[in-house]
Image 1 (spheres, rainbow, N blue to C red):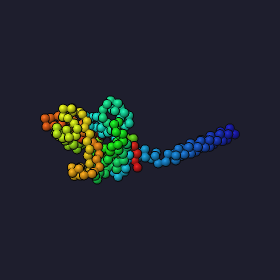
Image 2 (cartoon, rainbow, N blue to C red):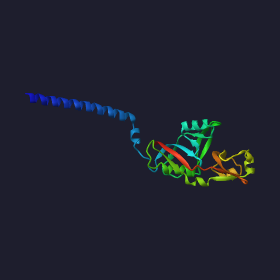
Image 3 (cartoon, one colour):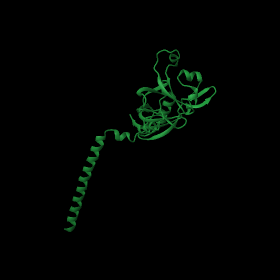
Image 4 (cartoon, rainbow, N blue to C red):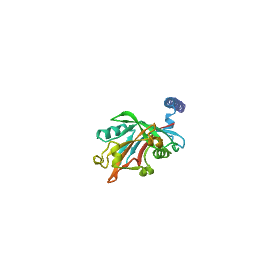
Length: 227
């Protein structure tokens, strides 16, 4: 008799466990259902052809941020009195080379608000595009932009003066904004063309003029979302 009661008690306990387990499973399924497909994307990696939304920060040769989507970093640098641009997140197609010479990005500065578009050059976009391959959502890494070393110009004292800058007033490390276009021929002949912003840094001063570096050798990228 005692053995029979013990078995009945054991069966009752198992039934209770099954009911509790079913309730827990139901709750889990409800949570997953409410999350939609976002829980799946958390484990996905960017494959060639995927479109990813990314955060990024471009750095000049001195390691100073030039343009960033990081609002905290933007405020910190701006508070220090250094020039920096704030950008919204951008969508990049993974492992796909840019078909054009530049990729325009709307940017904000403390002086002019959202009035300007910044020119991401093709090598920079391509480096980000290839760099995100295999990255997961919220993963961050630093990439190098090899061709940035060739993006320098010698600005003669005459050219500087035509742009409202005296040679005697500039120093190594100074910022020089300039306008670039995706159609150099139109710009050279003063025809109407869209102009995009680019930030250069004075890297040298010589009797011939100032060497201005418009290349950014490094970037931090973080995958926000994979579509």
